[in-house]
Length: 476
Image 1 (spheres, rainbow, N blue to C red):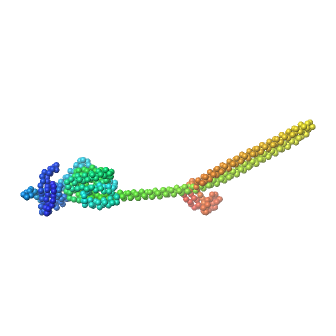
Image 2: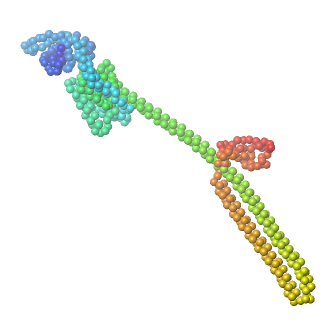
Image 3: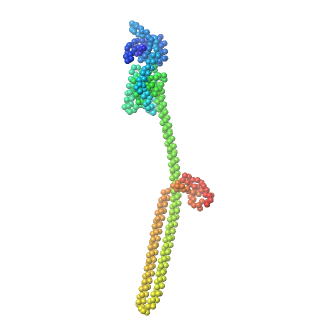
């Protein structure tokens, strides 16, 4: 069992430098080995076909060899057979050891459990410089970046050879620290490289690199090698893809799905907004129709109330004037009757007194004349006083009637003005909204009484939400 330290070809021959190491990895011995061309053409194709690996530095081999010594070249071994099963087992054993250690530490599935990216707007990519797989990746990633859809940050590292895993960890750590300083962490990390021999990819089966991926709080996407290739990085990463092209394809697929979802959401929002606008427009039109109908009905009702009130006020005013006139006539008649009664009484008393005066004339003309004169003055004074009292009473009644008429007319005027204000503040639509309707004849003129509606006359009835045709029928 040997480990290849160096390998080179020449004229079909394979010249090797091999070593033996202890369990700690320290070199115990080194030697030169060769596989002659006639042997190499037989055993190497079979070995590569069985293992998928090629003879290169770092690979372990179980060989059958014959030691030789030549004075010119010194000690060497000639290899004539290679056990491919041992090499495969060594590669798998290395992965089993790393896998078991990560599982014991409880971090093997850790990166698979981080929240998946909802969308991709920024991706950190590590790949070998100018690798073919990176070129396939950038054919699509550059197009996404050109249109401002997603930003890609590229760092480069060796992916094979001694120390390759440490370089990958160092490159990613430096890039992540820079992103954290700018408060602009990417949505995911992509580790990509093209295909290669199994032993080339075996450099990635490294515990420190695998543990670095497990500890990342960001999802790690791997696209390493071809479909048949698998490394321990693929097992611990958030998602494994067969090739770099499939990594960028998955990123594009999620971006396209989010774009379709955003488009569908936008269309749904626009549709809902249009539907709401239509419903609001219909509600406004209904409200406008209702207001118009209410205003029309209210104006018609107030107009009718106003006419009725004006008629009632006119009738009340005429009635009050007639009553005042009748009361004035009664008072005048009463005054005349009282005055006539006083005069009649005075006329009746005068002859009587005259007779008494004549009867007493003989006894004393002066006294009689004086008494007669006094009695006459008394009668005349009483008649004058009665006439004056009747006149004052009549004047008082006329003043009271005038004040009442003035007050009535003022009240009528105020009521009329209030009704007119109410009329101007209302419309037929409000009246219609209160359950009233307007009946019009064929010419569109309102019909306000049964007398205006001729039998079987076509009429039109206006409600708050529309009109309908009808016939007046026969009056009952």
